[in-house]
Length: 190
View 1: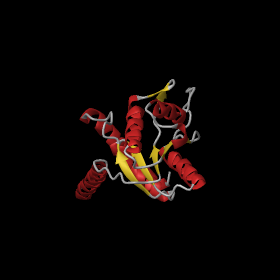
View 2: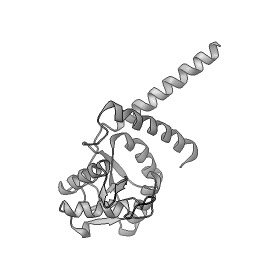
View 3: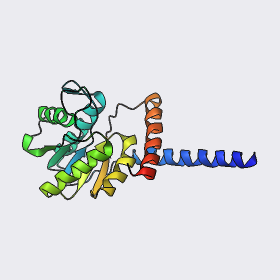
């Protein structure tokens, strides 16, 4: 019985440590000059980005307008039942915010964070882009940056400061999901 208590305590401490690391990582904006900005995909509603995706796009456009990168890479394919890909919706929205179309690359094949980054890395190689700023929600960035490194992207992270996940009620489920997925990635590489 004592061993079970110790094991339970060790597991709880491990989960608290991982959660704290994910949380803390998302509080740091490491944006610095780079060749491009990679915007990780999120769902769309018709031909409009969801509120979560809207804030990722707005933040990336802000970084672009500040002159931190000359190119934007929007990621995300078409979800089941969607008429438009995430990246095409994001691209159109960025153009409405004043980004010229020749500053935008997009990929339309990915459906997961890992696929987003694999496809973005291929675009970077194709166009000779050697560094990136990865934009996503704060709690998503620890795992995303691990994956970016694993696919060979030299990147820094910049969390969306206006994430829709602001209240504890919305952050805790997102954090729990990320704790699960970071362990899943550590074990399976996917």
